Length: 385
Picture: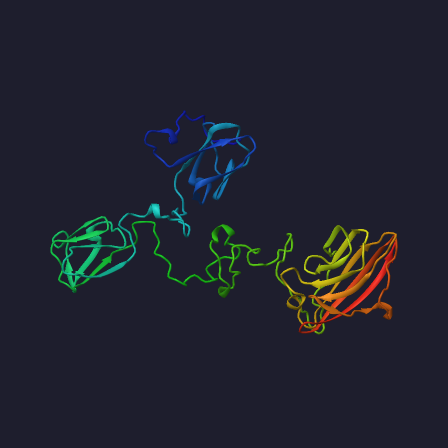
């Protein structure tokens, strides 16, 4: 590496008790050629560069570009083996303070916002509580009915409390103006309704920041959870205990359903007598014991709800009743809805007069409400063996 003169004595200006010139040090690693300076320089001659106590020749051994010092050859490996001494520069070096970089901790205590507190004296008390704690009594402008008060002659300050040396007259207007910026990091409370969507960044409000229940009148659900609001979650199992209506339109269907399961009740019971078929409990009722006599089937909503209450005019319900038959077969001889006899319209035009021995007879019923307590039932009997 090129250099001028003999080896310099072991003087390190950055380690002197009182450095004579501005200087800084770098560590060489035998590969890095560019180093970032803390000061901007205009020419290689604005600095003295010493490597391993050998003064380097400007332009030949190194060059500069603003804050970058670049060697023509990488200095060898060493700790603080590169010294840079700043001589002078045609470039003025000023400290640059980025926008928003000065924090509250860098501000003096007597810097505060121009807050104004107003009070009406009651004629008995000599103290008033301010909304903020001033830096000192002299950082306030205090007036009583327009007359400026001075501290400590007319008042003293302790924390955020002003104590007057005399009691202000009843009804007197007391005004306290805080001078300067805030002495605390507390920010004045936002006015109600002052924050709009413009001030809130997209996606910045997380679930952790949302508490309480948004009422329906404000666009919420009125409940703490979707389940509590009876709103189905498509990725979770849902149970509906109320009537759900999907209306669609004259050109679009109201619902399209795949993989539907119907409830079935399987009972080791023999068909006989009057059998109450609760249509809210199951869509399929299967008796697995052999029928012992002809039977009447009575359709109802449940033990506490009639079919007439459950269904509206123009609505229908289709159910199936599976009856196991032994060697002596029996059949459904009568049909009722809410305990009232109904003559079904049987498939083929004729009501069954017998069952099918040693098989399972499947009876299907479509119940249509045609008016108040008026029903039409379409029925069919099919043998399965």
